Image 1 (tube, protein in one colour):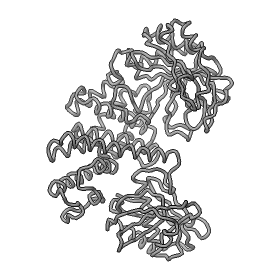
Image 2 (cartoon, helix red, strand yellow; image 1 turned 45 degrees about the vertical axis):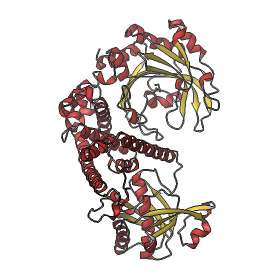
Image 3 (cartoon, protein in one colour; image 1 turned 90 degrees about the vertical axis):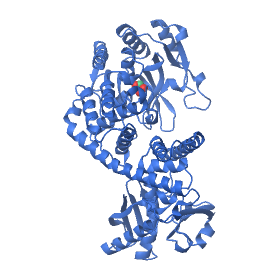
Image 4 (cartoon, protein in one colour; image 1 turned 120 degrees about the vertical axis):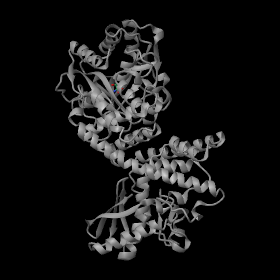
Length: 606
Ligand code: SER
């Protein structure tokens, strides 16, 4: 049974049981606390909370979803960033008994599938102190499963894996019961009994609701008796096309094929909703997805513009279900091609740096690379790399140029022959350690705990942060010592900076500040920090912003070596290690912010 039939069968089944069929909502939700639609229930969230549903109490849908939390997992047998979710929902219409019976009948009677086992929620499996610990055991679901014919030994008790929600900061949530077939979770049936607050406290929801979700790809996999989701008809033609374009066999490069196939789908769907690659929010996700497609395409040695034929295949697979894909076909191709070309250039630059650097290392194994005069640093990377091959350096290359470790290692081996097993292990270990550190930082950032007015801990944001220090020094030089920082807000895309000054800056003054910053960038100055007491910091004339906030010890960031210090500020970081990496600094706006305060917006161009 192909996936088109499956979708229809599901929706027809629920129509027969008096559910209204509702179309998929957009991938971009109205709920601002989440980036994407990740579940079928999201468009119905208000109806669980008492708002009257225009569709009646019982509905069913097939929802387009994007989940990015699993992006690093894609490449295995069952993780995806884009997927479709079949679901039936009830807002006070029916509850556990009916929901379980409907699911059982669809799976066992309609599709004739064999259930491996089901799970039900039990707080005994939840650790002490968890916010779900106080929820009662779902004995009712246990009894209902027995009644419909699932033997007791196939009903497993589970902890937080059998509890769902909320999506976003707050919302409906509750215990779930899940159906497993051939070892994988196929259907998640949530009983929305609670409302979960921002602080994770639970209130009873009256009436309780039902929210179910079944991944179409996984269902297709079990119905079509395939080993993985990538062998189903939802992927088959894509995989074949990649085989054709790369002249390689899927069985030899499963991970690469799967990543390309999944990410191209997600990108096409997002582009069809007008999301273009950028450094912000949803746009950043498309950029990341697209760049991974290009990188893995490179690993498979795909020729230029392998993207267009793949886009065509995605549109072909889905055009009947999601007509917007065919309508926006040309627009999608143009958005994605542009990004591909842009990224190709970045990759080329990265490759050049990588091979140049390797040559330096190999000819001068004992020398600091920065002492070698005949090699010009590009984007500063060369200048701060250590003389031995380290995973940290490869991680920097990955962060700046999107070079995956595999690609770097391949280049290295091409240039200097096969690496020794021990060196390879060390480098890999270091790389992943660095990656973990970075993820830790990003998590801190997403929890809103990041210092210095930075929106995140990405390299782009960090670069702009260092640029802000240089700019403050430039402003003080050009306009005078009355200039103090009054606030800043930095994202991956731009810096915003408020400072004390009364008059509008002239174009000449703006140019002088830009020149000052770009001069410091060109010199590729080192950026260092030291910890000291506030008094010591004041003694060496470090600039401070909001003094009252500082604790006993402060960090002082200094840009430039001893005889050429251009900036010295009390600051929590983070900063880049050398200024050469920053690119070209440009002030895009200078305006009044409030009385006596001016505001600058500035960017770094590559
Ligand atoms: N909201 C649940 C899920 O996404 C069930 O639909 O798994």
